[in-house]
Image 1 (cartoon, one colour):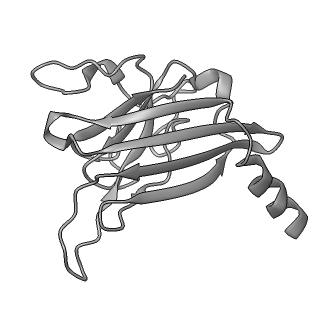
Image 2 (cartoon, rainbow, N blue to C red):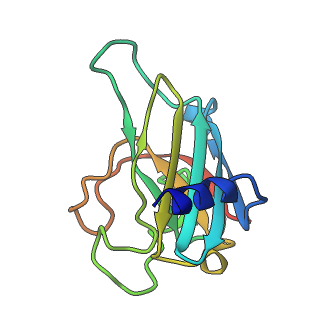
Length: 160
């Protein structure tokens, strides 16, 4: 097992196969982050680092944010949806939520900062290039259809 752990750690020192620069909406202009995608023989290793997330000081004010790949190809918006161009969750196999290919583990806020690394076999990097990464204001409940009741879209980035 230790050999495989070292394998994944060494992957993180390489150039990623794709990257999304995530930026907050007008209401969350301090949010900025990077999401890196590394194709491996075991799946896609995803590493995300985000700063400027909303938080309130206090021991019980830990924020959890929904985190998804959406099928849309841009972060444009309209009056009803600040990132309408991101569209719905990436779900090429028409699976129920939370089994969409674009359903990712939540981001755990740490005084406005989040860092996560995980492995997924729900997609390959080439399938998501050109799609969008979205951070939501609320945690995904992993049951509400079609998208987990994650609330407002607060940040978006295109995977390149």
